[in-house]
Length: 425
Image (tube, rainbow, N blue to C red):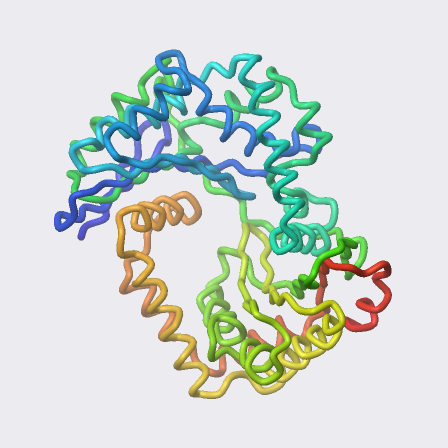
């Protein structure tokens, strides 16, 4: 399996992974723009635009876009994050030229008709409502808002009801023209393909409307300077009449350029990565206080955090938070045992390898890596980084990260945040 890379004069990057043993191919266009790039006035524009590009181009209607891929048994979708947007399709290898043509058409030739903007506005507002009706989803949004404050990383990817209602067609279309540029795009392909053949097809598809006819440019990497948080409080609370209290407790972690991100993955796994993790054992197995318990590390350019989640009976919420803090304090003081370290390393490497068993996952790995780092590490290089994490590295990282002041987000039937403020002091 070979990963190859081509950089065009316009700055657009193409990365491929040839996997001759399969009969499928995955194609993705990764754009280096997300919700952290938005001003407050256009909050939610990146996600709104992701929806809108599927509504029609100069060559295809919305129905023709969707039916073209479905007619060959393929799948097509898109997603927006805080730092990038991805449009992708997965098809039988012989249908890859079609997937390239259709997805590229969205990027180069969207028309964003006023009627489509108004129609899709309703869809996005429904998505916001759906998010608000799911407390296990809402609590993570609340945590980001609490942890980062009123900043671009603290705001929702979806925007707000107010910002979406006020977004005009011209604002969204101008955002599209200014942000969807070749030097900010990575095209990733994985499957039963040939690199140069795919490069030729991509150049032909993306040459529409003079999209690639630009002066020579260098590709862009997001600046990695430290991001300034602006938290207003250490506890965020949304009072809802739910059957469970949804809890996220977190603290500053490492940014995406920090070499310790591999150690952070191991530490997060040991804390809440599975049934044998500290949190799962203490909260669910020993005390039966929650069904869902886990941890996760999130990294951005210039910032990052480590967060723990649990859903519990409201009357046990404070107890669960105290247990979380006890686990964190113990690991901060004592690190991990040798057995825990080995298990966590095995869990991280096993999940990585098992998660790359299909062409879609392979495409995502190389596309995201190229967009973020400007390079794609091999599996062997990643595995070496993970297995190189030792007890001393974990102890130093745990002491620094887990000993810092936490932020807390809670969604549940609570009128006052004061009881939780006491729990995190």
